Length: 124
DNA sequence: CGCTTGACCGGAA
DNA sequence: ATTCCGGCCAAGC
Image (cartoon, rainbow, N blue to C red; front, side, top):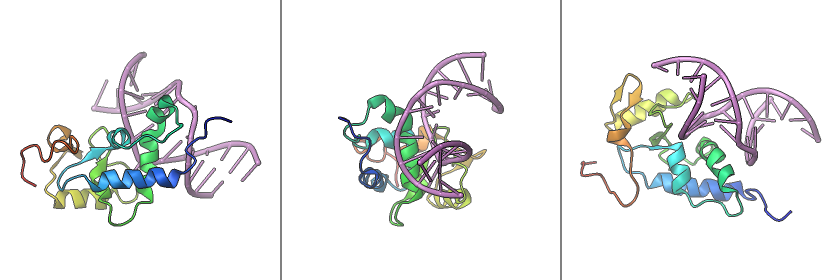
């Protein structure tokens, strides 16, 4: 065995939480996007990470601490994923001023581009 | 310990 | 628009 496989998931999860904490108020990111922003775990095949990174992000969000704005992580379709707290998630986002159209969010408008692009000129 | 499911994604039919 | 598929990991039961 030369290459270990994600020998410490906890570390990966904490990296995910760190990234999510940097997402600004009234903006959203997708699972796949977060997977790309996170520093890839060493020793993981890039193809494997591409395929399952987004899912790992999902697992990480399922067990995240309360100080993480988990409501700002949605799927690539611009919708809130189907899970027990979906209603609460939407409620939180709307409380931040995010507008849902037909159960969907306009990613063009609300998706966060990254740390280098502060608030895209919009307030909040 | 083995089998099933998954807060996913991108592309194809 | 909707449904299906490959990906081949990790947690839950």
